[in-house]
Image 1 (tube, rainbow, N blue to C red):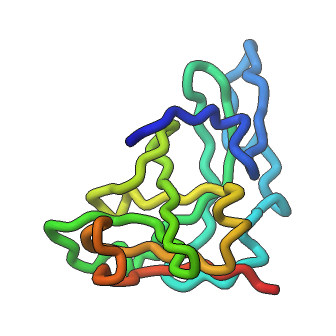
Image 2 (cartoon, one colour):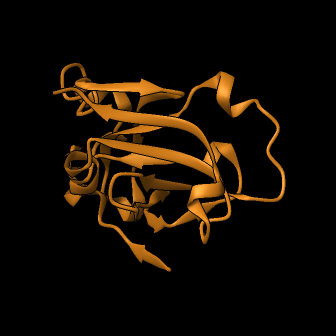
Length: 146
């Protein structure tokens, strides 16, 4: 199942109106203290600031991606998915501006700041069969510091 996201409405995102006289750049957005993940304990994940202009609407946003050490591991034949072990609920990854439940490649793992991320004390990126999350391998996690 996929759903289209409007990035300026994504929580934790900073929208910037495109300048008609000059192209917008990542430097035109102040991302210094807006990292919504700075209060989380990350294992196998790191915060990453992205800038893009889908359909001419520029936006800068923070997301979580796999660390280089984790992303360089060998993964074959299964799916990556986001799972909250305490509740058994799934979240989504962001693929450009589309929300997707699973991805095939470690470079596609991108979690955005959502109510799901804030309402679950721990979320995990797992690799395996999403129909059997208890058998999937935990490759990264994010825990909210209380």
